Length: 359
Length: 281
Image (cartoon, rainbow over all chains, first blue to last red):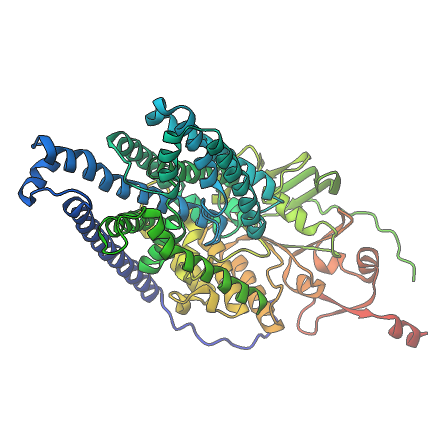
């Protein structure tokens, strides 16, 4: 080999010091960017939460009473309006939005496709079917029963979608098609339940099915907070293995990642996150689809999983403030507004991918 | 010309092998691609696995890298069963670059190479100085340091392949397995990648195993050639000893003339097509 005269290559321009300095500079710049985005999101969330509690849609509360009531220091109407209605509603919007954002970003990262979110691949429909069953047939055990039934429904759907679309690797279009098919099955089941339920339960379940934060109470907030805590913890454990799995299963295995275990864990965590959020505020559409890409645009693809929860929270509470207070349209269910934002994006995604595939 | 049947000539290792396959049977589903195969990979050498399409060379490489579990037999890494070792431990000793890894959308070169440090990271630990060193060394060795902030999508095929090798180098393993690292590259980039691997082998003593579809390049760069056909080893040894017209006939069913490389003593083959054979007669 040494006898081979290969044309002399130009001397490398980069030195080790230079390269190390560039590595550090890139990392510093990215940290600053992440910090900036985090601060902006925190301020935005604080602002939207205050707006939600202060404006609050229906009912009037003296501005001076709002803050004390929020800490449970008022009784009577102010207590009821602020502490029992508006606070749980705002917190449920924040927490559910964070869970939707997390679920979507997890699935997008795992399946390597922006279309593959729990609502698109049918997981949310499974959660909806589970939750509707409890809402209609066991209204007494709604507080604990709805979240559990939703998670169970989501897990069943996740297993079914996975089993039906897995052929030595996930083909995304098969995944989406299987998801659409199974969603239809779940919708049919839910519709059937409606035909045989009583009028009052139907009214409750209908409002919930469109996706609305208006029914949220402190029980729901507790469920969401516990769920978000657990899901964030699991995501922290899965973050790096998922990063190596974005290079393909073989390379990830070569890098020491237990690919099968991580995939199943991420699927279940994402399904649980979507299901818990759905069980309290209903299937608020498209939040899980948009949050990850917005976070990636703000702070880089590597940070999408970390920042998708606050982005999702901002989307849901922002939509909720509009849904309650916007002139002409309010009050509408929150899910209507997120759909207005998300549906065009979804169509654009599909059209863009079609164009990409045909070119 | 009727191919002579060659007996396999096991190339007995001088020291303990770095990697060893003992009677492995590997396959997808019912049909085994490899049946009862034995192989030694010597430490500090470049070994090339060659053979016709579907001869099992890629399957063998994946088995050696524990990507495919054997149905029977075992793969030993430095004497220990590779499937009994913790996978992260294996990942600190052996790197594998598959044939078509995926680059996440819009990832930069620096971030991609950083992924190679995965087996060295502890949970919750931030990037260490050792990580930065390994990444910088890998970028410099592959001549990709200037590309550090460029998105991988925007690179040429040759640059991209060097970046993937940089990822494998950042993993910093004494053994590196590569599945057809020169596929899809033009001839100049192929030689560039092979030169790089030869340099690494020479300068750091890295044990390299690569699957090659090009007999001549394998003969030029490898110190050991493993010729496979139908999932078994036909011959194994230094190119000058094992690469001859009989072997090419046996393994590829191709007639050829073998001559030394003009600037090296390594054998090179010139294929003889039907028209060349009739002219000869």
